[in-house]
Image (cartoon, rainbow, N blue to C red; front, side, top):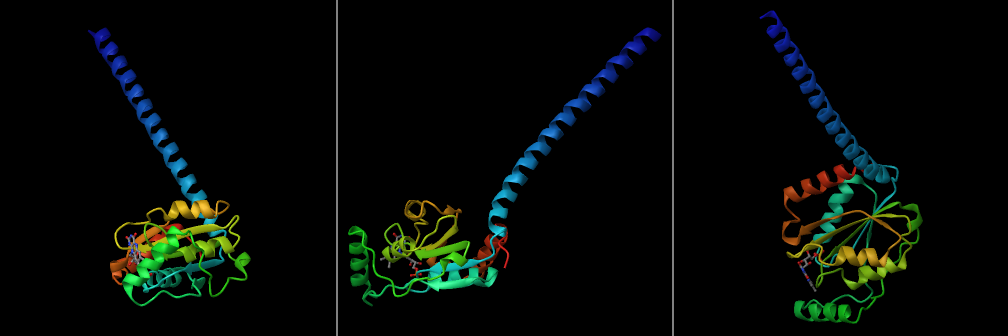
Length: 212
Ligand SMILES: Cc1cc2nc3c(=O)[nH]c(=O)nc-3n(C[C@H](O)[C@H](O)[C@H](O)COP(=O)(O)O)c2cc1C
């Protein structure tokens, strides 16, 4: 009888030891995964935090993108630069749309009113624009091509009527392939004045962890 009790106790003890070792192993795996995720996040954040010279460049015809640019500016400071074309678009919406469409079809590079003369001093550059026919207005292409973005961190943002970024992020990558392009954020034009949108911008910026 005593023998049976001893055997049962030994079997139970082995069970408990095995149970603990399995638990411990899965805990360690969880910790390892946690560390990898943490390291990756820190890596992305550190690319930005080390760079504190920020430019917010934007094009805006009716003010929506400018509103987002201002929210970003309020959240992190930095300088703002409005991309403006020498030839402005007609007031008449239909005429305006025709010209914008034609410019896109011709892959035009509308001349800009002014040029950033010291892009060198900026490391992180937000580039904002409205979506026009699935991508950026052609003047934004001019802006990207006029400047040297090699090694710069570029963060796109846009406003739109429902299509999101469209092809614009891809177009930015192709236009300035030497830049380090971070995933950006898009906003519905109709929502820009909402408090939620301002909060969303502040939260987005906080996650990017860009220092003032
Ligand atoms: C010529 C033109 C083309 C547009 N094309 C699109 C489009 O393809 N997809 C979309 O979602 N919105 C489109 N929109 C809507 C604008 O992207 C949207 O109203 C934007 O918020 C305007 O920004 P802004 O006030 O900064 O100029 C277009 C607007 C215009 C004037």
